Length: 223
Ligand code: CTP
Ligand code: CA
Image (cartoon, rainbow, N blue to C red; front, side):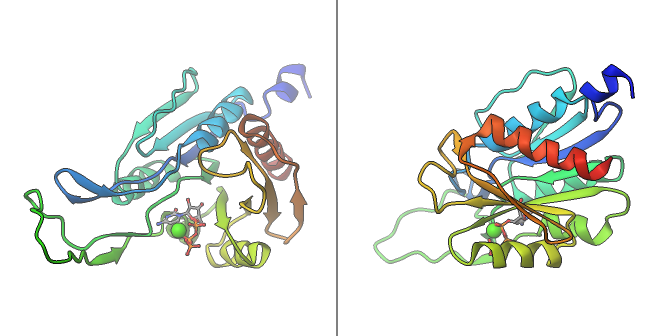
């Protein structure tokens, strides 16, 4: 193996990555969203590009920035848009990592005009969004498919059940147990579980270091 190959183990490989939150419109000025910053996903984009991969970064609304000649950013807003963009690139990639915090529900109807306030309570009917990760797992061929799991209880059990149900090659469990891990922070504590149900736990680290750990584990399993 030449020097350049060992430094750029993903040279010539393509990677689909989802990141950030999704926003689900209620009316022209309001939405349902979540606190995902996109930091973890953007850190993975950088780590993957630094290993030589061409990255298609499908990002929900995020104020994160990335400048790398191998990273193409595709901006989306809703879960439906993220679903369409992900399916557009999935066929041509070798690896897909779905780190986005996709809304599980969206308003059943989007009001065309701003909803006026009343004295009575307001009910908004919600309907499930499409599960992007599960939909890719169902059509997966050669792709190495990685999901994330955010759990507050029965972490390992829930993560393993997502891994199996969604037909993944690996899942990254994000531990909220530790303070300093999660949405707004710069650090994360993860456990990676692969298809063989092998578990590998990592220390609390910067999201940059966590992204490198995730990419190294993927490189080990695809080569
Ligand atoms: N995911 C997705 N599309 C959705 C919901 C989730 O692609 N509509 C992906 C996430 O990007 C993540 C994985 O599925 O990689 C798990 O997301 P998570 O919210 O932990 O699990 P859910 O399957 O949505 O179940 P729940 O929220 O009930 O735990
Ligand atoms: Ca969810």
